[in-house]
Image (spheres, rainbow, N blue to C red):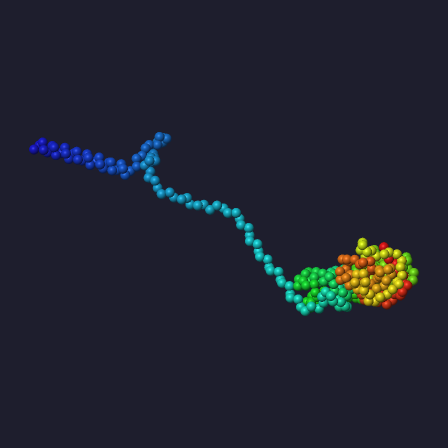
Length: 299
């Protein structure tokens, strides 16, 4: 009996040992093992073994906003350019002629847009001057004078004097130098330097006007000549072009009105004649000149 009791006690003790061993083993599996840090100089500090760390889900680092370059300020939109007022009815345009055109040219000359002598002929030079005035004032650029352009021009200028209408102001009319051969009797004194024709009677200038001459191939002859023929409505047989108010002085060369000169100014040349662009002035001169009057062409 005693032996049985002792056997039972031994069995219970063995079972207890087995249970304790299993419990410790399970605890060891649940808790990570630690080791003493060899570099510690005091109490041992637990260091987690790398192989005991369970891998975790990688966490993406929080992005740090990098400083952006300062943005340039957006340009302030400019105010839209005001549109030009629509042109009104046309009053004058290329091809027109008369005293109203002469007044237009004189008024443009007051504003330094027209630098030629007023001729009363609306040609390329006048149209260019009108276009410049229109563009400067913010008007519709047409080269023709409409009611809007004319009213603006009238408001900026004064009524032209007779001298301005005739082109006898100091700003627009160069002073002719009289050749000594022009000082006696009646003479048409043609100065190539100042590009003027002066009607001189007994040394006094009665009238003067702008002229142009022939080019290199057909130069205007120089020297002293005499008017030998007058033709009010002559047409050139050689060039088939009108030569109104012709005063012939050397072969086929004559003083005459030129519509081309009136329209284009000095952007061109004659075929040897002395071109005049002021028809009204030449018409008055034509009636005064006589056959036999002297013609002096000089530099």
